[in-house]
Amino acid sequence: MAPFFHDYSDTSKSILLATKDDETTFSYYEQLKFCALDILKHIFSKYPKHRRWIFEEILTSLGSLTTMDGAKRYRLRDNRSIHVISALFMQLVQCSSSLSDLYSHKTWFSKWNIKYQKVYKSKDMDQIKMLDDKLLRRASTAWRQGAEAAANSASFFLEFLMSK
Image (cartoon, rainbow, N blue to C red; front, side, top):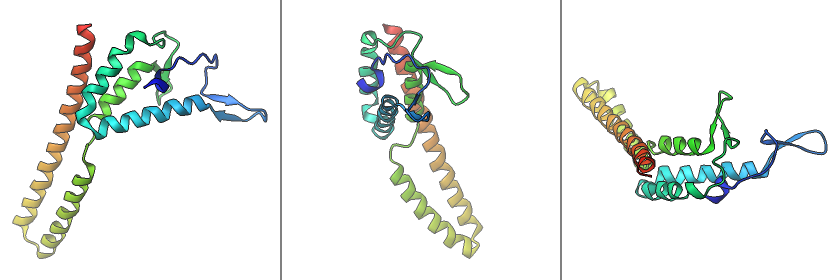
C-alpha cells in the first residue's frame, strides 16, 4: 500500500518528465504507483475472502496519510480528475464485481460450447433451448454475484466511513 499513498513532492503537474534530449518519459514514481495499484486490484478481484481485510487496512490508515490535500489528483479518461483516494476505492469496488474464478467459467463454457455444437448439428430444438437456458442462468448468476459483491464492497466502505 505504501507506494500508492506515498506523498510525492514533485511540483510537476504532468506524469511525463522531460529528459535531456527534449523528449518526455514516464516518471518512475508514477510507474511504481500504477504497478502497485494493478497488483492491488488483481489481488482484490482474485481473492474475495481478503477484500474486507484490504478495505479495513486502507481505511484505518486514511488518517495517517499525507495525501488528503486537494493537490493529489487522479486523472480520468475524459481528462477530468478526482482525488486519488476516491479513484482507489472506485477501482476496488469495480474490480470486486469481476469473476474471481475465471478459469472454472472458461472451462464450463468450453464444455457447454461442445455440447451446443453437437446438439446444433442434430437440430434438436428442445436441447438447444435447454442449453441456451443453462447459459443464461449461468451468466445471470455470475452477473448477479458480481453486482452483489460490488454492492457489498461499496456498502462496507460507506458504513466504515460513516461509523468514523
